Image: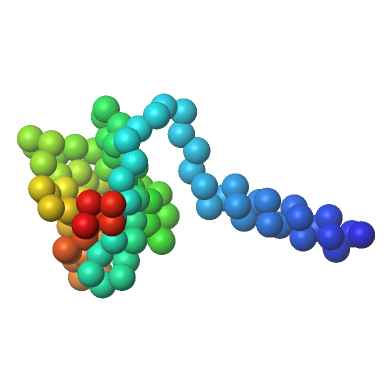
Length: 101
């Protein structure tokens, strides 16, 4: 019985830790890149919330709102998709929204 209770607590903790809850409703878009990477972008009035396999990042809009950055990670939406640049990794380019492909 203790093992079942412990397992339940562990599973619930992992599930909650891997989910970033938000208060406000933002437009959410999922991207699939040619290299197989997937990430999600949630748009908010003052920033975007970028969810990757490495974590959740808040990126602010740059000049002209054409790109978003936190000083290291850069997200650039395009008419056809997006590019994601991170330090130490090759750019994830040719990222498209599967629902728009």
